[in-house]
Length: 357
Image (spheres, rainbow, N blue to C red):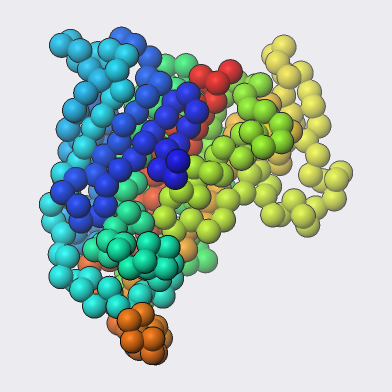
């Protein structure tokens, strides 16, 4: 099914951007688990809109309401955990003209064709980044379960508008170096330049994109399978489910195509009685299976397609060309808010892989 992620730890997401609510049904949680709800809310707040001058002005509390799955003590009881988030601050009238004139770069035209014009255009409907809120809820739970096993998942912004952050050591990444406030970067100077680029794009009624890099440390070797059930396959499926993601790479990624085998190969060694590699161009995965080295994955996030500049489009009902300048409230760059979404998606997949093993 299109809206379900995972095999053993499954997350079924439902709702639309301007529907009464959005939410998720989660199965595969261990029985007797008591979530730290303060940490869940703090994690979801990182994605929530209206908390920064760099993001959309739409304000949503994103408070999860638990519908089922807990006993009287607040512990998971074996039943599916169902939750919902009530949608509030939406301006549906901003999308009236988009029923006929689709936004370039958005799913409007494809959805119109797929669903015969019955798609919900308000806020992008089921194609909206709003649907990543319940994904972050599921990811916040998975992160707590992984942490109990000594596994950490942390992402930082590699690049926004061509401005690059400092790199972390691929073999021994210091995840504590990533800022916990403002933009998720290692270099504060790079972060300031990124902020300036985002604000400049907003001033010019335009948008910019970026690249996010995620590390998983403490991950055991032996997770995943070869061919079509590899760790890369399952992570890529989850990450491409995040609206706006146009590319995913692991380890050295596309740079590997420019290297020689003698440069790309990571020599094996025994370190403290453990099998390791001296480098980590492979990003912690070989043959679709984790090696025990830090897992490294990056995703490319496109510029927000909703921009105030006039663009060429068409009138779907009149079958003629039509200009379009998008109004309403939109992020000039969705990359900063996509950082916790990437962490959530990666955490869900890694926890699912552990259950599969």
